[in-house]
View 1 (tube, rainbow, N blue to C red):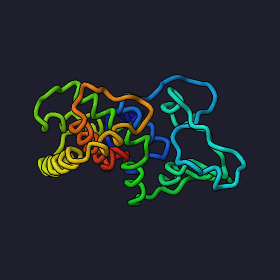
View 2 (tube, one colour):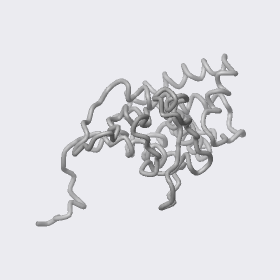
View 3 (cartoon, rainbow, N blue to C red):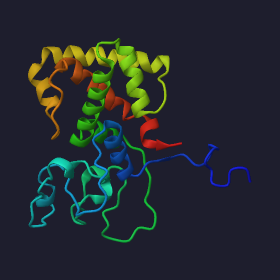
View 4 (cartoon, rainbow, N blue to C red):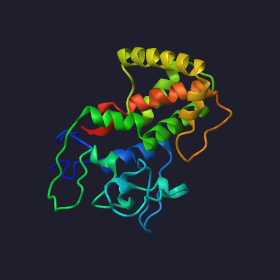
Length: 221
């Protein structure tokens, strides 16, 4: 065989990344991931009241700082109240042994990617990295850098047009809703670069979040 370890040839089944891999991918492209190896479990973002509603008798104590950005394998897991965002991506509750997870693709997964604090913060941070690097250059170049970071490919002309329309629409909205802008940019534990224009940053973050919903981000081809 020329390539027995499959290092150079591109082939194999197409499938969606696991729940843990999707979250880790978002942390990685945004530069937020903590690569520390080992240590106790951590408690990243989770909707309030999940543990209480499950009748566990305990309250979820969300981590701060590095604990929010460690690899998903370190996430604390309570079988009676598993992380909802991971369940949306077919993670099992672990109440019973599962030899192989089901793999689905549903609208709920896009809803998680666009609204979960972990992914909103990741989108905001990757947008910030691009804006810091590209300065005041044209929007098209920013989109190109976002796509290379998130999708690892260049955008088609159709995709650029769609994203430009979305960017303009979001920019108009945030420009006329300053409180919503601050609330959106305030999601997550990390602080944003205050030197960046808040309206521009918020609109670019929405575009980054849209790119995270692309198949190229959540699928292995």
